[in-house]
Length: 238
Length: 206
Image (cartoon, rainbow over the protein chains, first blue to last red):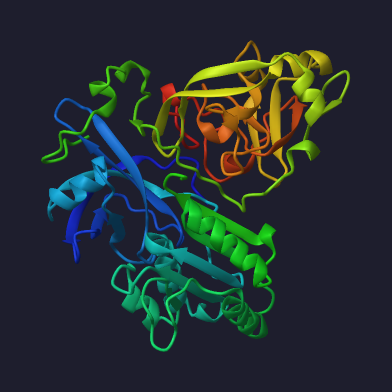
């Protein structure tokens, strides 16, 4: 739940890591940090010398108990904020931030949940997995991550290591031929989860508009009630 | 607040000569139209859709799809502003003014707020004064085409002078109330009114 008022504050950049030029992992030391829940986001605001500002929201990848807040910023075409993060940002820079925000797309470990993320939509799911590992609630959460290739999927190694089901649509993965996840594949995961932890109480979908439509239908065909689905969606429609 | 080292900004709205139409903290998204939703997008059959105005009214009334189209039509052409900071200029909609529906239902003297309800269970609250006097519509067409599922079709509320989460997608019911009853986003931390020019994004903003 977002508090009655989450004020703007400042954050110092501690680490910036740009593995491939498309994704930037930024770790921030936030003044007056509030812990929050996995699934939430921060707003980052940039300010020019004449007080012109630009702000965007980014999902948090870090466990709420992490002393730093970790964001994964994808470079957008002609992106005003993401372009700055990729081309200019360095450790020691100070940013204006507001968060954690959003009281809907959150998981507190108390419900049996399945989460499906596409591309950079896996970021809030990484926070859920890190939180689950720390709080001993990993049995209640199944994460399905979908990327074009393993290299293009943020946190691919960490997702695999944490037991997430990873699917690649443009390259074969092991013996599996490149394809989006099929209903029977996700249905099996859901059945297994239900057998261990009981009926699915919450489902999370995060990704582009097209991916969210696909993943919501996929969950429905895998036996998840659609009124359990919470969606976090970004980007334009075609 | 500190200046961000090395940041000058792209200032698209300024360059296009319409900075005066961009509320604080927003950016010009161009002709893209991002979609954001908290729940599964429903696929509804237009001819089966209807709109009901009830609650604190003299005559609770329901209009079928056909009946809505027989009312005097009305258009909006202007800007829309999403709380996630994009603004889209010169977006056109067609539908019917909420004034027409409210006039037929007759708001009771104690009615001061509305809750817009969607087929999905989504709800959002607004002051009655924000949806009267030509400032709110129920629309079924955007940029000359039937409103798509993703953008809230077949029927969507349109209140363009407030952040766009107030313009409930897949709207089916406008309930008039005497107290301000927080809707979906409002109970999850968002502002009760949502005026983009006052930057009323989250609870606790001015």
